Length: 186
Image 1 (cartoon, rainbow, N blue to C red):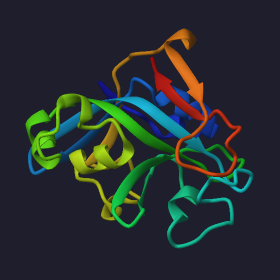
Image 2: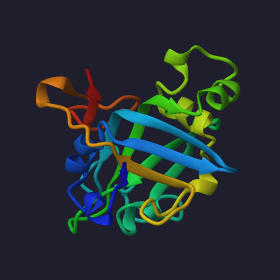
Image 3: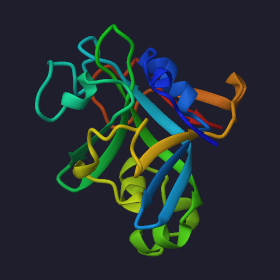
Image 4: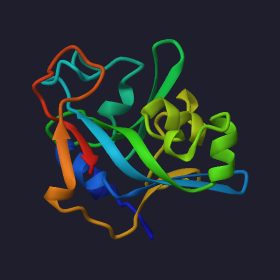
């Protein structure tokens, strides 16, 4: 499998979101490789998207969304959960794609330990769960997915047909609910 190049992330946020489905998130630390096939994402554009962290402009928290595409943006929410995003945008402004769920591929024993022996189906089926399983937190924000030796995304050559994917409203937001920018593999 090959690592995704910078130009993959330097496309419109919605395009990157759908193209991330089927790609593989990899975290490699202390000689242990964890990986999971991306099955669910949500797109957040910039100052035109009231549900986006970038809506009101740059802040210390959301600064990665305004940086070079291909970096991580990890934030803390509800006082207890981390969520990992991929910074993805073209020249039209900031954007990021929240990785909501992956299918675990490598490192299952460690993921189960970190998730307190939850069943396989519940290891990484939510953004906070996958961050816990992969041990991602705010220290992992602004990591360059193109050059990092610890976190990256690989292309396994899998492409889903439109009938194999579904677009729905995003989850857990109270604004811009009409936007069907959550993409899932059926």
